Image (cartoon, rainbow, N blue to C red):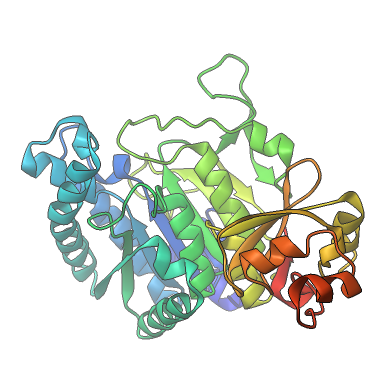
Length: 384
């Protein structure tokens, strides 16, 4: 966003520039948790949503394009169907609740945004839609066209068909992946907590962390897996995972409390995760992937070579596991087991296993054909 446009957004927001810099990017993704949309009895918090719609309208008039990742379908559907445990007692209950609640959720969004003169669109995605490259590109094209037309996409995981094995599981990481697909510069996760603390905020002496320049082991150790409301599925662990995905794609991410009437136009305490220099679109997609078909374990020498920008050669691989084909995504783990990179395999699983640890001449003898230049080429790899 240009300075003039940022200033317009500042004025439209009543003189506050909340959650900078996500507030001033040209394209913004806002994630709203279940506890903010739905009250304890399972009813929509409509007056609060009206305020959010007014905030979105102000940003849109200032020139910002906004998409919303909205939770709440399962909670709404559970109330209508009278299901125990908020509809999360069984997978079948969750799927039924999602199918029922999604209609109500999309209608509410259409109503409140329509009241501000905005058009809403519904997009339901599964994990596979964003993990498979071609489907990811199709989703990205749809998002881009809707946002360019001034439409506000309302996005949710398609929980009516998702399974325990193949799903995002939380809308924090979905929001980060959507930001990546949309080419957004910022993500705001509105939740029941106002950011990251150095320990569980319920514990004495917990300190709020206002800014994170780099996500490392120390930051990850601060996460707490709990969801305070009991309705959502994402705790701080999922939010930090989302920040890692967004930051790798060049998007800043803020975690902020939604427990105010106008959280997108009110200056409030939050935690801001600063974006890295944006990777190429393909490498950002690789880095943000949540699933891998297999794993390659490498020795210390190979790990050092990767840090220097080299491709992964078979000689530096100490183990290959999983069932994968050429072109599938693989995790690459160092000697300590930590995943250090992700990339596209140049070999199917059986051939990869056959050449583990071998030099080029020995590879040809093992395979019966001339080997490729690398197990994973640097052009199809991203360091994590």
